[in-house]
Image (cartoon, rainbow over all chains, first blue to last red; front, side, top):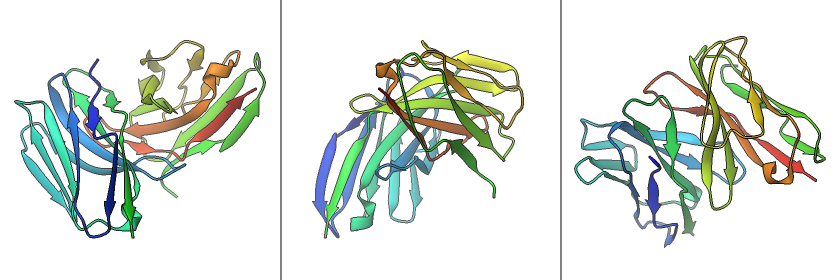
Length: 111
Length: 111
């Protein structure tokens, strides 16, 4: 399976702390994407990092990609209660036109 | 408004009935997808389409039928609903190598 695997499955932190989520995958990729899902809602795209990129920033988000280890991490700095959601990585594998999602990390940020 | 629309938002049906979930996008994206989301399984791809009249199976296609006569529409039909098809269904669209845009989802209960 090409499926990405997020780690940890659940993460509980206080407001103001940083949250780090990891994603591992198995095949060569064109890009890797991170999505956020609030309870009961559709997924929202956060950031896309291409296979030739090592790091990307968007606001309080920082994504890294290590293709030699087939892994990525998502860092949310200075977390807020509104960041409480599930976060998914999705791999866009070479030779495929579909994205494969992991099972997600549930992030709880307490005030 | 530009976007991707799913209907209905909620559906309750009985085993053996045929159910069609609708999906409409306004971007003219080439690719459209149907995913189901279940606890413990994350998002799993049911079917996808690369263009009008071109469809292909995903990870869990059994019991589902799709069609794509127009670029903007991608309905998903459960030919004879079973309890195991109780799930939240998400439609999404994108261009190749780009991000996915998701609908709000259809929560389906099969009794």
